[in-house]
Image (cartoon, rainbow, N blue to C red):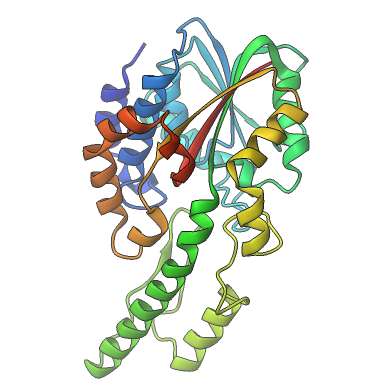
Length: 307
């Protein structure tokens, strides 16, 4: 099976498929952090919920015998889904042969009971409307004693959303003022792989209207997921609420650890490549403190549950 390092090296020629710059390095580091705490058996039959670009599926493919990766059929901005076609293209370019793609919702999986040794989802559950149904489905298709691993943001992400919003707003205002003072067109903000882009010649009123549309709760941040508001998101993403949700919907035993301590939402205002570089360089700190009480103050958390 192809190693994580080899797949990452191949991906360097496919950066057009990165949702944001540095995303491939972040996912590689996330999987390496996961592997430090969880032994993945190469004989496992695995299922990934919400494969996105397909790069995480490619990395997982080297850790299991067979992987089925699922996602929605087409691009959906609300759920952050890129559509299954993107993953199909990237997996072909990376020459990954043991991954099969299936288009479906995480709330209704088209697989028999007790099918998989490993169920995996990364930054997906928070975007699903009915999280309880999604977890029920994940445990339903898991074999008895199988692992259900889900990686989710914590309440810290909701706290970081406040400085992120104001830093982002200040940066956008400075960009607009700088462009107008120099009589330059605004930089195009391309939505990767979705085939759309903002008009390069928008007026100040157009920009203000677009901002209000994207941030209807301003001066409060918008929730990054399927939640009523930022306060509902904060409450639902408290660590004990994720554990309670897992236990209520099929978990027999649960282990947890910190996956990412970095305040991603703040740093991404400046550079997503910076986040990837910092995470890669500080990975050893996650190994040291990942299972300590500090895990309850991380930005992203991993729950490893057994059926």
